Amino acid sequence: MTENTHERIMSALRTMEQEGRLPMNAGVLVDELMKSTNLARSTVYRYQRQWRKYARAPRTTLDEDLATANAQQRFLISIRMPADLLRWLKSRGESQNIGYQSLIVALLYWTKDNPLLSSQVAGFDSEDEEYDEDELG
Image (cartoon, rainbow, N blue to C red; front, top):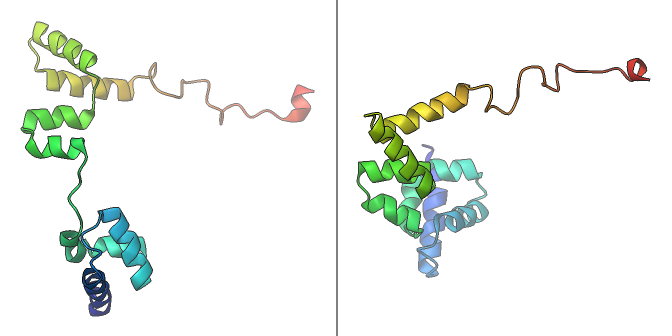
């Protein structure tokens, strides 16, 4: 960590705090730090240990749910699956004596490698079929 960059960020934070502008949302704080320190966004994020305590905690319902959820609920929230599909998968997993989380992961791997569900089907790749205008006319 360069002392110069660290000092520039801390100085900007002290100035904002004296002006009564802190705390603020993390995205806005990063933008303000970029303006006042003339640093790149990636550099400001690299030093987030210094400014994170001045940022407001995220207030979305997803963040609140993730903070209070147990491990199983966090898994379900993180994949953001529609409830009807989740209930169907859970019943299918129970009927086959498979944990529904394992079934979901298996289905995700299957769809990733399945040529029927991929966006490019063999033989229809645009790169494979290059026509010369003279051949068509």
